[in-house]
Amino acid sequence: MSALVQGMALCQSTGSLVGVRHPELGGMGVGDIDVVTAFAMSPEKVGKDLSEAIFAPPNNFPRITDDLPPSGVTVRRGLTDATEIERVAEDLAGAEVVLYAAPSGRQETASAYAEAALRAGAAFVNITSDTVARDPRWLDRFVAAGLPLLGDDLASQFGTSVVHHALLRLLEERGLTLTSSYQVNLGGTEDFRNLVENDNTKMESKLNALNTAGRVELAPLGYLPHLGSHKVAHINIEAQAWGGTSVSLDLKLKVHDPSGGAGVIVDLVRIAAYGLRQRRGGYLPEAASLLKSPPSV
Image (tube, rainbow, N blue to C red; front, side, top):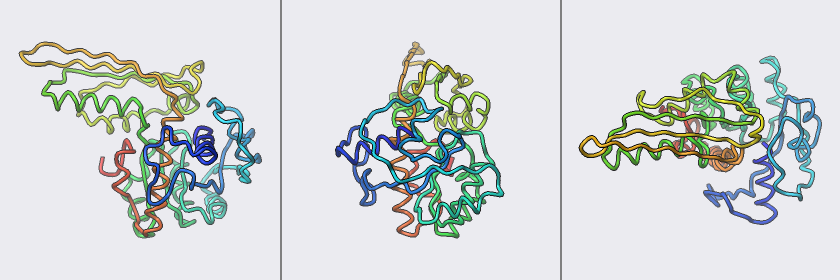
């Protein structure tokens, strides 16, 4: 969350709109988002002010602002099992939106935080590939409670899935026939490390985002620590044009993975907050373009 917290602080202190897709959503600017509580499992983070904790290991996102005053938010210990849901729900009292951003592949943890959000009367945004918003049982409960539920798995501002999907759509629009395609994703963040071990839901979510009915292959995710917060993707597309002539495209994309997520999170949080204030429960369709696997997929 270092990229998110630092980026919001930069927007608030300088008014910068660099990398901001929507300066205003639901009457809220990026600078109107306030963090009221935070959770972590790392001993290096728990008990520290959020402005200090975001730089503690295993964070590897660079410092982008030297002016980060104390936030007044002390990082609390996160959920260790379902017996602590009530404790977390009490800590969430007063929050409008709960952002779930733990590493993907921890379904029980994702469900426990969704339950805590329900008990706290807050909207829930799941940016991991674990199934929450796609589960009809969760969706029905959030609808009944009048609380927004957004997910699953965010589509980065300019990530592999977004670029790959756009290229495939362009082929179709221009009348070319897709023969085959693949993508390779390498990264150095802790989320990548975790996904190498628990990649089932992530692979499913990426395929959902591409929506190609089996015509695209995804190589297993690769964790390379020396990449740090960077993600490197390789995309190949093979197609046929008029008369069966061949078209081949190879593309390399390198981005800061956490930044690509943070630029979408600020929109998802504001959409969820606006929906909550309008008393709109369940999934909000306006978030569809920001997600890889919304309920309709």
